Length: 163
Image (cartoon, rainbow, N blue to C red; front, side, top):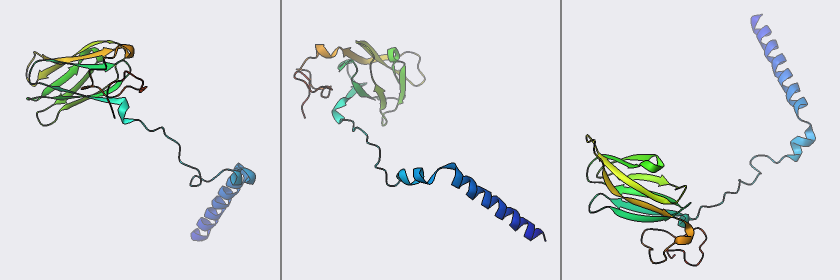
């Protein structure tokens, strides 16, 4: 007796769900919309590898100056000899670093300026300057300095780097 009631209740609920689904969207719209599998995937613009500069700083030796254009994205990698923290205080960025695991900072400088890169060894309070990230307006590029930057966004004459 209970089994019959349960089956009847299940059939009623299933029937109501089918009626609601049939009434919710008209058949013309269901046929007009392509199925998800039939739709082409969304088009993405590939990012050119030349748009992201790779900049390397090392703890050894004297502080280095690396140049970058305003609005140019860059990945700054910092190799250190002791564990600690690498900071770009003016940009509010920090990353931990170890001798076998360099710190990596993804930067997109908002304005021209000189941004100091600092390192604080683990357990120490004082920090040392590792170098400066000199951000210049795009019009002030020096074509002779191709060692630390990749090709500019526009690819116009005067852009540093070659393919």
